[in-house]
Length: 97
Ligand code: FES
Image 1 (tube, rainbow, N blue to C red):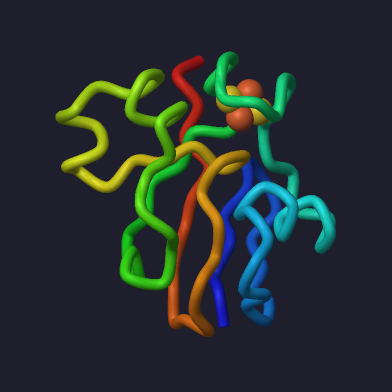
Image 2 (cartoon, rainbow, N blue to C red; image 1 turned 90 degrees about the horizontal axis):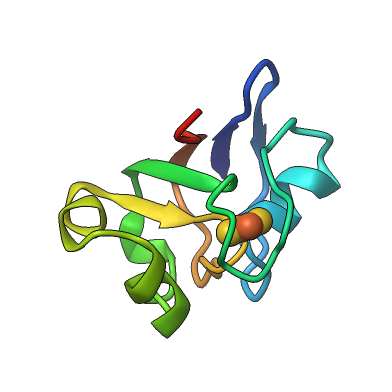
Protein backbone atom coordinates (compact mmCIF):
# COMPACT_ATOMS: atom_id res chain seq x y z
CA UNK A 1 0.00 0.00 0.00
CA UNK A 2 0.99 3.58 -0.55
CA UNK A 3 -0.07 6.36 1.79
CA UNK A 4 -0.71 9.44 -0.33
CA UNK A 5 -1.07 12.84 1.33
CA UNK A 6 -2.50 15.54 -0.89
CA UNK A 7 -3.26 19.06 0.27
CA UNK A 8 -6.47 18.02 2.04
CA UNK A 9 -7.09 14.41 1.03
CA UNK A 10 -5.08 11.59 2.59
CA UNK A 11 -5.57 8.02 1.39
CA UNK A 12 -3.91 4.62 1.50
CA UNK A 13 -4.12 3.04 -1.93
CA UNK A 14 -2.78 -0.16 -3.53
CA UNK A 15 0.56 0.29 -5.27
CA UNK A 16 0.51 0.08 -9.04
CA UNK A 17 3.96 -0.59 -10.39
CA UNK A 18 4.58 1.20 -13.69
CA UNK A 19 2.65 4.41 -13.09
CA UNK A 20 3.79 7.68 -11.55
CA UNK A 21 2.93 8.90 -8.07
CA UNK A 22 0.92 11.73 -9.65
CA UNK A 23 -1.14 9.39 -11.81
CA UNK A 24 -1.82 7.16 -8.82
CA UNK A 25 -2.91 10.15 -6.72
CA UNK A 26 -5.22 11.54 -9.40
CA UNK A 27 -6.70 8.11 -10.05
CA UNK A 28 -7.75 7.95 -6.39
CA UNK A 29 -8.99 11.55 -6.20
CA UNK A 30 -6.17 12.75 -3.97
CA UNK A 31 -5.73 16.54 -4.45
CA UNK A 32 -2.16 16.50 -5.70
CA UNK A 33 -0.71 19.71 -7.15
CA UNK A 34 0.23 19.52 -10.82
CA UNK A 35 0.23 21.60 -13.94
CA UNK A 36 2.74 20.61 -16.61
CA UNK A 37 3.15 16.83 -15.97
CA UNK A 38 6.55 16.98 -17.63
CA UNK A 39 8.86 18.11 -14.85
CA UNK A 40 9.01 21.87 -15.20
CA UNK A 41 6.41 23.46 -12.86
CA UNK A 42 7.39 21.45 -9.74
CA UNK A 43 3.85 21.71 -8.34
CA UNK A 44 3.79 17.93 -7.99
CA UNK A 45 6.91 17.97 -5.80
CA UNK A 46 6.60 15.48 -2.99
CA UNK A 47 8.38 14.21 0.07
CA UNK A 48 8.90 10.48 0.29
CA UNK A 49 8.81 9.78 4.03
CA UNK A 50 9.08 6.00 3.57
CA UNK A 51 9.55 3.49 0.80
CA UNK A 52 11.88 5.32 -1.59
CA UNK A 53 13.18 1.87 -2.59
CA UNK A 54 9.80 1.25 -4.24
CA UNK A 55 10.30 4.11 -6.71
CA UNK A 56 12.45 4.14 -9.85
CA UNK A 57 15.60 6.28 -9.51
CA UNK A 58 15.21 10.01 -10.28
CA UNK A 59 14.83 10.81 -13.98
CA UNK A 60 17.09 13.21 -15.87
CA UNK A 61 14.24 15.72 -15.62
CA UNK A 62 14.15 15.43 -11.83
CA UNK A 63 17.92 15.72 -11.59
CA UNK A 64 17.58 18.96 -13.52
CA UNK A 65 14.56 20.40 -11.67
CA UNK A 66 15.43 19.55 -8.06
CA UNK A 67 18.51 20.54 -6.05
CA UNK A 68 20.84 17.68 -5.13
CA UNK A 69 20.03 18.42 -1.47
CA UNK A 70 16.30 18.01 -2.12
CA UNK A 71 16.85 14.67 -3.82
CA UNK A 72 19.06 13.55 -0.95
CA UNK A 73 16.43 14.57 1.62
CA UNK A 74 13.77 12.51 -0.16
CA UNK A 75 12.00 14.96 -2.45
CA UNK A 76 10.78 13.82 -5.87
CA UNK A 77 8.53 15.04 -8.64
CA UNK A 78 5.22 13.17 -8.58
CA UNK A 79 4.81 13.36 -12.35
CA UNK A 80 8.21 11.71 -12.88
CA UNK A 81 8.60 9.25 -9.99
CA UNK A 82 7.46 5.84 -11.20
CA UNK A 83 6.27 3.25 -8.69
CA UNK A 84 8.24 0.01 -9.06
CA UNK A 85 7.23 -1.96 -5.97
CA UNK A 86 4.25 -2.83 -3.83
CA UNK A 87 5.24 -0.66 -0.90
CA UNK A 88 4.78 0.16 1.89
CA UNK A 89 5.37 3.77 1.02
CA UNK A 90 4.37 7.19 2.35
CA UNK A 91 4.44 10.18 0.02
CA UNK A 92 3.20 13.72 0.68
CA UNK A 93 2.68 16.48 -1.89
CA UNK A 94 4.94 19.40 -0.88
CA UNK A 95 4.75 22.29 -3.28
CA UNK A 96 6.97 25.32 -2.85
CA UNK A 97 3.99 27.67 -2.54
S1 FES B 1 3.35 18.47 -12.80
FE1 FES B 1 4.78 19.99 -13.32
S2 FES B 1 6.66 19.17 -12.59
FE2 FES B 1 5.23 17.61 -12.20
